[in-house]
Length: 186
Length: 275
Ligand SMILES: C[S@@+](CC[C@H](N)C(=O)[O-])C[C@H]1O[C@@H](n2cnc3c(N)ncnc32)[C@H](O)[C@@H]1O
Image (cartoon, rainbow over all chains, first blue to last red; front, top):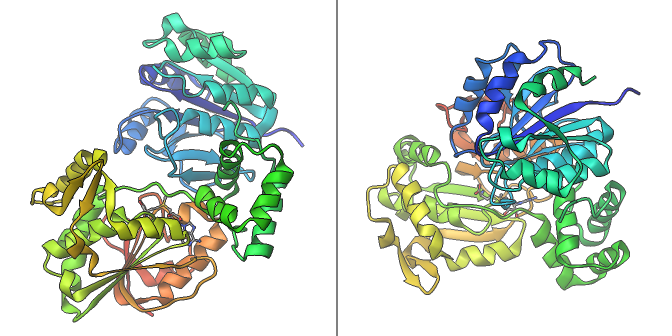
């Protein structure tokens, strides 16, 4: 069986700009799903989905509970729920305690995705002012996935990628390098 | 805690099985990713030395088992969560129920009661509380005990008050509670029309007929087939032309009951249109 692949992008303060730059450059035939988990204010869900839709020909939609995860779609984690991935590659939502003061928490999605995708998973952590996502990258590495972090000097808020670099093994990418890297995932 | 997978998939299944066979609680239809995360979290929090110890206590220690159920169910809740939803209840749904001589409301999965008090406040302001009865149920007896006390953290009141106003509330929210150290104790009059009782949506039956059923942020924890069973239970418990409301990310679409329901507006509220 060929391995299932997925790319998950996590970010907080300063990550939206990166997404807006990277998404337009993505290959329209990507053969894996892209799942985006960004911290933001409650109630801005459709706004973010619309905003990102304008920047890519790929289908952008909010992740819905029990929805099968399809290649070539960009899924946005809804605000105020944790987003988890089931073994049958469907989404689950969870309204449990915040993790790292965050819901959705990047750690929660990275960790549950690592358990589902194993070495097929690629996790990218962008700009942000807390360390949510770093534990998830550690788990991802444990399962043989690939962990990436935005180059801190290119980040509006460097703390999040810096923590990733300090605490685990990651490949470091500048914003301009991200599209080519993502397009080469196969 | 770098990794939540202290418990493996196989161990999760073993526990689910044990709990079903020895305690009669059926978690087999729960979504695994979240359930496993809760079980792993509990295992870490309680600092078990081995899975064998965790399993033994869950099986044999009644006090620990109670704690287990509390720990693996998610009890997070708020007052007037999703204000736009409560606004529709206030402006459309509840006033339309005024034609009934008596209004029975079922809040399934009510957790610690924040939703129940929000509902009672709406009914009170619409002058409907006197002829209403709110049945508030949950699988977890400990949260119901809390709900019955009607005391919520004072630190939350600012945010609840904002929700209340956004949901169309016109009064001074603080008139509904008195501050008691770090707690806000809600007006006991609101409680007169509440009945708290344990009810397991997986295994317990319909127990009355209602004009409004609310079950929010519970179905997300169930797999599709369990969701369908529970929706059928709600269907059996709902009078024709009355309303079913779910959480903001939940739906009756795709379910066998959907053909008999019509969505009301943009909130997750459906009206039963035939039996
Ligand atoms: C996240 S809370 C939702 C609280 C509230 N309805 C809200 O939306 O804010 C989920 C609740 O569902 C309850 N629950 C879980 N499984 C249940 C079952 N099988 N039967 C009844 N209640 C259940 C849990 O104990 C918990 O209190």
